[in-house]
Image 1 (spheres, rainbow, N blue to C red):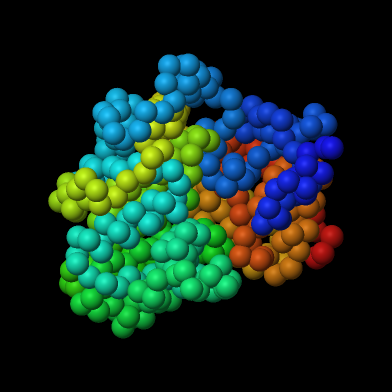
Image 2: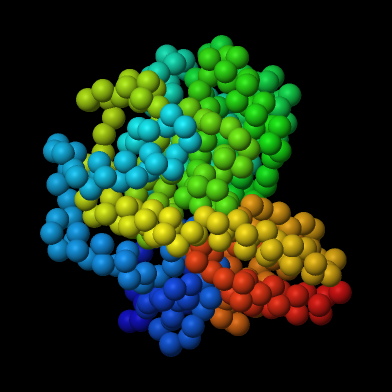
Length: 389
């Protein structure tokens, strides 16, 4: 049996997989089983920020794997402490404490527990069209009924929702029993939707006025993606809690909850834990990832290249493009029609893109891409859409 046949026979059918299988990658490119090369503008869903087969990352992971992959949080873990120190060097002011987990959904679950325990309150406010994960509480925080449907018995009833970007609606939903507002700097799975700097500053003010914690979900926008280390920094706002994952490990699963010494202090031994979270292998991978992003100035590359790329995409003359939006190297091209046609055409021509929220072509490439890589897709999209004008 080939891979597709084994997938159909032995794996759950919960993924709508494309009919392509990759064997290896190098830089911003992947290679399939037939040897065909693809420019990867998906990066494992914003994970592979330093691309594939980066020699420094591969060396760090291999060296750590040869010594020790796992011990558990029963003991001191040097690699975990080293990573926490590096993370504290780039996080917003005062956010110096980290708790490492295995994924973004786990990070959000832990952040919600932290907020409820710290405030001793019982409700959480989230935004409509958001995405925070698929576990019970994170699924409840996800303001899209299509993800919640049929799982309602498992979802806590503590969530209220407001319209993203609408501060008056947010104010009308918050109460003195609201433990936290959880929000994304950009609604990534929701179609790359942005809100104004004034909105985020107002959210911060409303949280302060009500003694409510502000949780910022940086799972997709964090670690340089938006042209800042963290997406919320584009709005000059410092949250109480941040959650991270995806790009943090450079391809190896790791998530993190980041907060202040005061807030983090309520999670004492026995209140929260994870067997695999913060293991030596994942932390070594994440440390190498942070070093590479710093050394190669990839945050700056995301900012400058992303700005030019969006400008070029906006110049495409097509009635099928409703809007181009984003920050840094998270870009959404909202299509009136043909979004999936663009994805399929790009695949045939050796470029990987993603469609989210039904009609938005999402570009979330490795942060190492250059202007030539960006131009390849811009030219392909322009030529493809010209036949519909």
